[in-house]
Length: 162
Image 1: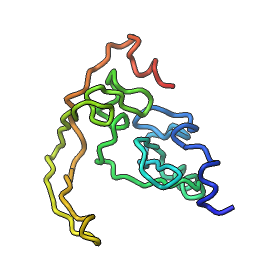
Image 2: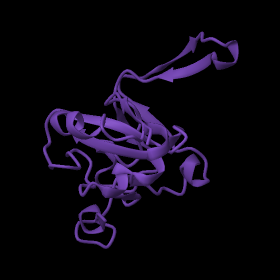
Image 3: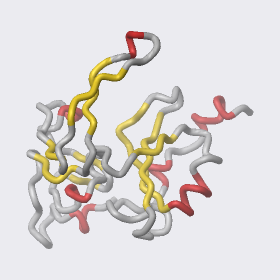
Image 4: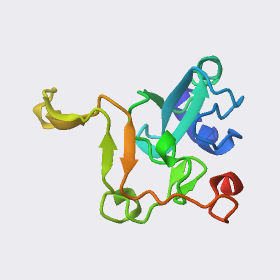
């Protein structure tokens, strides 16, 4: 079978890896040299699913896996994965369930970057791919949709990790 035809048969790493806590490798629980990956579907379209792996684990499992995974910079907004999300009641595993988030059907919550980013124009071929993008040079430091949990409560992320 080719790599393309084999994708549907392979499970998603975001569903099969055991770890679900931001700041540690999902495979071995290491907290150093982390890499961040966006998962894609069988047609190589990006999903709102992220995988966090240390560099040695990423070297072992990302390339042999037939599904596409795109490496993301650590400052890329990744709802549910960012350090700011660790103590939020809207985090379930490595996912954000905030009702105010645009991807969950609400108005987009405001994210604050440090240092602040800027809009830049990117020229691509064909011209229809050109346009303005927001370049964030630093990590997300605040989210308007964040609601901190009370330790020990049912919304405590340590109690809710699937």
